[in-house]
Length: 169
Image (cartoon, rainbow, N blue to C red; front, side):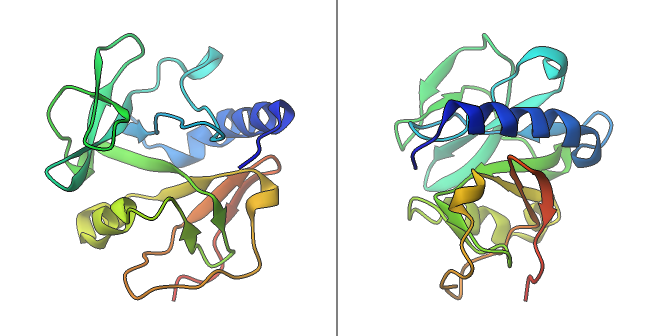
């Protein structure tokens, strides 16, 4: 994904506006450690005090762990920086923000092919946590193929704001 700095800044601004609607009081916001070309959501400015969690892959399972800027990180099983603490239960997260290569309005996401988020969200406890895809508007597609194991997402966030997915059937 080719990401223009203006798109990233606009999406970060939209996130700051949407945050009160996305996150319950005292719950953690699940973000991600950005890979090249992904929107960087690490804390900036006015929302630095939001409790956060980052994903970590261990033992063929995606979990979320508490994280604050400056906490030590170590490469997880996929080589992505992840916190060192214990896995958090779904009940501690108010929303998951997830990157994507593409998304359709039904909430079908094209990721990097590992199926990590689908397997996590197949669990009803994790499925209950609102999950929002973060991507530039140019990565929104009219329709993507849906595999039987795909778990549609609830909404997406782009340069123009927060948008509910229209069909999760």
